[in-house]
Image 1 (tube, one colour):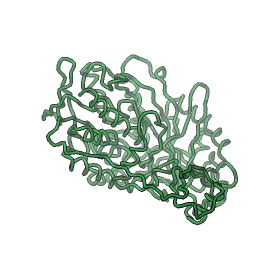
Image 2 (tube, helix red, strand yellow; image 1 turned 30 degrees about the vertical axis):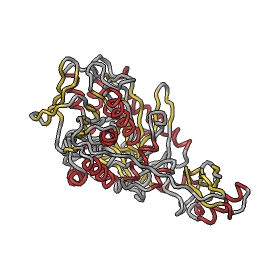
Image 3 (cartoon, one colour; image 1 turned 60 degrees about the horizontal axis):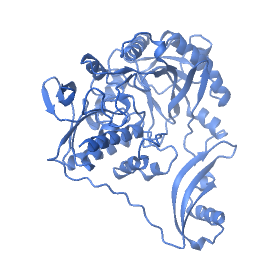
Amino acid sequence: MQKEIEITLAPEDVQQEAILKSALSEALEIKQTRIKGYKILKRSIDARSRRVIYRLQVRVFIDEEPVKDVFQVDYPNVSDKKPVIIVGAGPAGLFAALQCIENGFKPIVLERGKDVKQRRRDLAAINKEGIVNTESNYCYGEGGAGTYSDGKLYTRSNKRGDINKVLQIFVEHGATEDILVDARPHIGTNKLPQIITAIRERILSAGGEVRFDQKVTDILIDFGKIKGVVINGEEKLMADAVILATGHSARDIYELLNGKNILVEAKPFALGVRIEHPQAIIDAAQYHCDIRSEFLPPAYYSLVEQVGSRGVFSFCMCPGGIIAPCATHDNEIVVNGWSPSKRNNPFANSGTVVQITLDDVKGTDPLRMMNFQAEIERTAFQLGGGNLVAPGQRMVDFVESRVSIDLPKNSYLPGTKSMMLKDTLPDFVASSLRNALPLFGKKMKGYYTNEAILVGVESRSSSPVRIPRDKETFQHPQVAGLFPCAEGAGYAGGIVSAAIDGVNCANAILKLA
């Protein structure tokens, strides 16, 4: 007999099998000897009261031996099968490739950037010298933006597809099984590159292709049907299905489509700053303690406030994390955040952004939101002083409109320069943040402090352009065989939701075959 129940345990007891079995026995009102095994299905921290606990959802095997769940996907050899071109080797592109193989198609993945190993050198140049390789950086390259900016797998995309399958595939390629049970699963930037490499090897072993330094410079269309793509301005690659999974920063793709009169649409996005606190402040606030227990992970937070008609919210919160320079050109400042698997850095950072609506940027140009975004990033670069030095300001100083005499030690390696962030941000964004931050401080003790630094600008929270597609076929309404996919097309946000969208696009091709 099997039963599923929820139990609560103190943090120090979660890894103690004897204590866990005793709690299960007590909850089920049976002798421990009848419990032949158990499987933790979900695990989450509940810090709402002074006493922090873990909540565990557990499947218990009573009077019967436990049955191990088996996950297996058949990846046949597809080297001689019908090709599908996949533009982009981020999570959407890689998972689309795996699903294509499962469905009997040969994926040809084209990535403008480098493989994960080669990318490291370009990231080192960004961090240490402020030099941006426009084709290989935090946004471009194998694994996409998520590979070197955290690897968080938290998503609310329950209705879009099989989240568990995506997580299981990550486990099959090297992730720990913890991601299957944790409420906020996280791989970590230090571990994700090896997992991405293993996924690439799986694609290659099944007869698929993954090509690097392959920038798509044109899309070939004949009488409203996709025919293929042009690579690096010269090589033609033909196929009657193209999955466009280029990510939210590939502005050249939006310009290419718009220039060919292929419909793209302006899309709302969010803009703001990355805010960093000492991790100890966040731990104290969330865990109601002076010093965080060794049995608890670094604490995270999620904050939202309505300021007038605008939403102000935190996202991509990185406990024990680092602020990263994510520019894709050498005349812009873009910041993001990431954490290693242990989340053991002394700082906690989070994007804190304000909603930007279509009414905020006047006109009818479908690229106007993208151009507005780019203008803000260029302004931040000019004010920062070059070499990717970013404008920064202490939190209370920002709210009270005064220049910070100095800036706190922080994790942004290219360096920060004290200045008035209002000179970087649009007035309505700056005023919304000024109103929201003290309110956040009322929700979370210690948050509103001059020990926190605001670093600008956080501008790539989502794509400012949508590439439309049919809800049923996933194809572009004007181009049969063109499948706009994931974050770059405006249909996903994060690793898991992008991976699911890649799977959905691959399955849409199968339905049309």
